[in-house]
Length: 394
Image 1 (cartoon, rainbow, N blue to C red):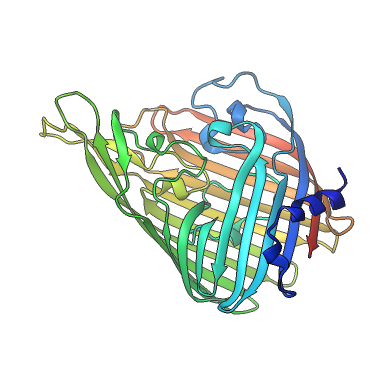
Image 2: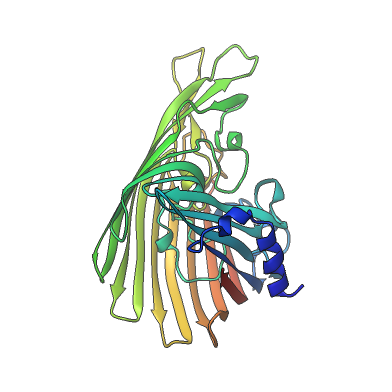
């Protein structure tokens, strides 16, 4: 089907009232993208076309033989944005999805919602970037999943934005118990026979200071309450709860006219599901002397770092190079093979011969360290990507 015909059919499904005012603008946008490459090592087969340190082997040859070629079109994306004038100001809406399956669809090419969000004036609601994360830290790379030490989470939320623009202040109440990779939240609490309970929404906030052309600095924070109820029949009771919190400091620094330095440092406890790639939020520790509850849950500390340099060689060629890490302070009762540390490094050359068309080659590396058994695993990949953008405003 030709693109023009597809766009016409898509617009035909939109309510006619959207076009009742001449100032209404509807933009249909997206891209098709293909990734192909060679993985010299091994990773969980559901994540064959990305680098996720938590999905690397936790023991020798866990995921079969090394050396596999892969092809994928899962990064392809389609979205619609609306700018609609109202008596209260301009209504901004975004509906966007991609084809990268996660959760029960992990490993598949299938529709996955990215954004379903609207805002009017200083208020917004829907699924959108969490204020705790800074999307501008994401480097100009073609590897899909991104730096593991980065806070990266789209969540359902209600937000208030008293200061807007280059310098901004945002507060949000977010859906509790959501998972970055689309899995079941109970899997993120390492306690047997318990069910999670979330009495309060997660509270997040960000403040970005951007006074001039040099760039910006942003400070974000989050607080959350995680509780659980023991549903087992054993004599002791493992019910309990913890408070999670985190602080995220990030920045973009314009180094001359051709370079952007993207930086982030993060620390928190019980916020792993807000990280780009991290394990459980809650683990087990001994509760010595209490026969009714011999173990109890604790919020697991996590720290993350991102440092990337994006360089523009000329109007057609760019490169990105950098490093990221995520570190877990494991609970004392974690399994020896539990995830402790992940590392990630990338370097690329991207070519844009004409506007809207990009191709490139990227070298990718990831590394996993286990908690206490001494095992570590690496992944090394070379990836070639081809991307074709489209956009039309009506």
